[in-house]
Length: 131
Image (cartoon, rainbow, N blue to C red):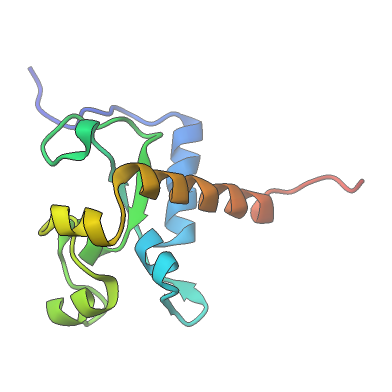
């Protein structure tokens, strides 16, 4: 049996969701109103898991949120130290998952926030015919 991710290839709609997540940027930074000028803090797509615990099966591409490299994997980015990243963005989901959920939000809250941001993003970016 081949080892790998439990989610398979995304559909066109799921890929569009992940593209929107990347365009929107990190939801932790959005919640804290942190940006790099006019540019959002970069986001990596994080797949939420069954039960919200590390090592569990992924819920699928429809259950994804955007997290910056620190919040997602515990990797400092943008020339910042780990201490500076934690000062700005709070605990890392990878390194301190319990504290992350307590201070930033649980999976359902973050998914709801991400879905709201995607809806707002699509309303701004989709072409609509003149009325």
